[in-house]
Image 1 (spheres, rainbow, N blue to C red):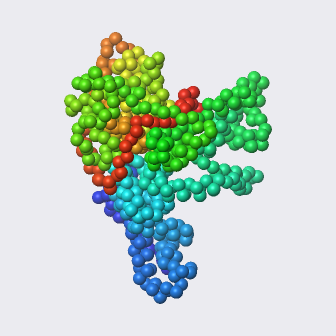
Image 2: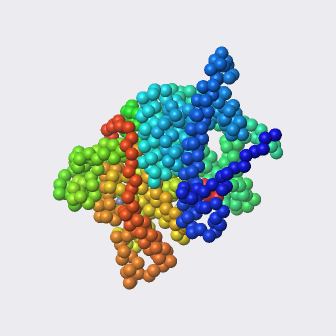
Image 3: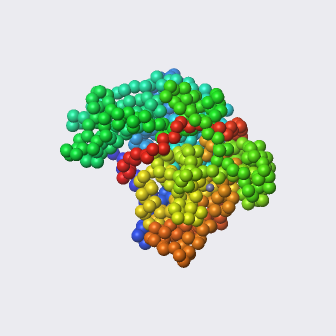
Length: 596
Ligand SMILES: [Zn+2]
Ligand SMILES: [Zn+2]
Ligand SMILES: [Zn+2]
């Protein structure tokens, strides 16, 4: 039996790629070097995935060149793909299935997604993410449309180099799905017809006398069913010993068997609220939120967004809107606006859209092309006629009004902490710069420039983890960014993943931006300096965070942003200012256990 070749990897000097010299005692390295090495390893992982595709393609050509004699069997078991797979599975010591997936992805990379493939070489996405993109785009058969989708997805990956658009495989897939749905609605329609026929219910037996039931239905029906289960189990008394997951299982079985769901505490004073009346009251508050452009309801191709699921095709939005239980609300961004006192014309002029769009020559950056008009620059003296100002409840300036709440949730889609997938409507809306109850003018504002969705777990992290700072800012192109700095000093910046959903937002400015505050509350350096103010621990922590945000911002201003490459021309559809969403569920939210 042949001796295995020893791997040279452990001795390879990859210091030029950012890895430590082989044999380095990691404990001797400063934290920043370890942080850099982790990122370098990620880039290397993506690059090696790129390299593996190259080798698979090379093997594919070699097999083709050497197998002219098996032409007769091409159509049978030994076609080119099967032969190449056989070679790959031997080299990789993998299953036939894994080798075939590799080959098919490599062929997709070469033939259908060359620009997306190039981003693997840059260390931006790995094979798992590429596979998900290839999977989402497989329904597209038109070559011209496919080229455009390839360019759009690649631009999004590259343009968001610091934006972590692809922070998870799920978000990568959602981004690809949106481009497919908008560029090739017919393909999505065909796929969806077939997919709906795939509704099913199955089960399998497990060990120890257990079994599993799976249900496949539309995304909205599954979300509604899931919320119904949460409404049922919300009635348990505090002494019920079950976890939420166990209780949901019991609730589903009770509903399916038409038996009552009961509290499992032993307490005589059980306070469970699970009568039919109480259950009906909770069920009546169940809402699944969808946001879309008004043009989508009128037959347009622009995607909508289903909370907890992701982008959905225009056709899918219209199906949901046509349901008997759908409630459609129209919202206008204009309702947030007030005349800008700083504008020469603003004092008299009604804040009409035309006035906002009649400024400055058209800008050329790719992201701006997505919008429908030039962006009024901040601080150029060319002040917009109207600004976002009506964002909080008149009765309670701490709480956002309905439209501000909707925008803050849909703009980010999920908990704003990178890598957290918790649905935005299951999150708290957190004031990034802390709201000051005593002097609201000194604290962070209740505004889209200062509100981020945070799941209960990450809200607790922010509150309790010393050195954890987040931030939110809007750049001169009107793009919304957030960042997180960890206690070990790592800062991750993220572009709002769903700004495509509300493109006009990029044309608007809020009063805080115009005042140069940018949601920092840093303009109010007097908070901690005020001699009359008692400095509590919380106040001190907030002051420290403000200082850190300020330092982070100073750093961003000095760093040159990397140039964003131009994507293929994007069709420019006019954006209507009218949005709709289903009714806002403004009751107190119910939270899952933290993921850890
Ligand atoms: Zn009980
Ligand atoms: Zn603001
Ligand atoms: Zn979270």
